[in-house]
Amino acid sequence: MSFTRKNNCRSSPTYSFFGNGTANQAIRPGDLPVAFPATLRVLHVGSYSMACEPIGLALTALMEREKGQRLLSLDPNVRPSMVGDRAAYLGKLHHWVELADLVKFSRADAVFVLPNGDSRDLIERWLGCGPGLVVLTAGGDEIVGATRSSWVTVDVPHVKVADTVGAGDAFMSGLLAWLRDSGRLNGRGDSQSLGRTSWRQCSRSPRRWLPSPACDGERTRLLERR
Image (cartoon, rainbow, N blue to C red; front, side, top):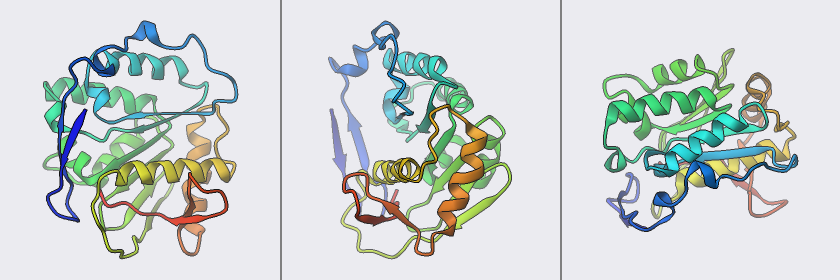
C-alpha cells in the first residue's frame, strides 16, 4: 500500500509505503512459475519491490533464470525511503543492470546512484555492463537514448501537467509497446540487436510518436514528467 503526496505539478511526488502483510513479504523464489510459454517475449521488472525482501530475491532469481530466453526490461524507479543499506542496494542494482537488455531510468534515479556525477556518466557505465539500450528521462527536459554506438536525444513537447504520478510507468509501457508493434522484440534477450535497431528507428520518427499500449490505432506522444 502506498500514499502519495504531490509537491507541485512538475516535481516528483513523495511516497509513503506500507508493506506489512503484502505480496512484498509473501513472494519467494520458490513461488516463481516453473516455466513461461514461448509466446512471452518480454519480462519487465523494477520499482521499490526490487529493494524489498523476499520479493527482491525472487525477482533477481527470475532475471537470472530468464536471461537470454526473452528480453529483460528494467526500470529501477528508486525509492530512497525503501532502501536500508545503500551500498548493498547499489550492488544489487549493478547486477540487475548486467542482466537487463533494456534499462530506463530517471534523473531522480541518477541522483541517488551518482549524487555527485552526471546522468550521462551513468548511461555510459551501464552500457558497459550489458544492456543494448539505456534510456534517460528528465521531466520536461529532453529524453536521451543510448546504445554502444550512438546517442540520440528527443525533445519533450510542452504540455499542461496535472501531476506526475505514474508518468514513468506510462513512458515505459509506451516504449515497450512501440518496440513490440514495430517488430523489434525478438524474444531472445538480444541486447545488441535491440541497441542497433530500436532507438535509432524511434529517433527517425518525425514527430516522436509512440503507440498507445491501451488503444490500437491511436497514437500518444513520448512523454515523461518524472
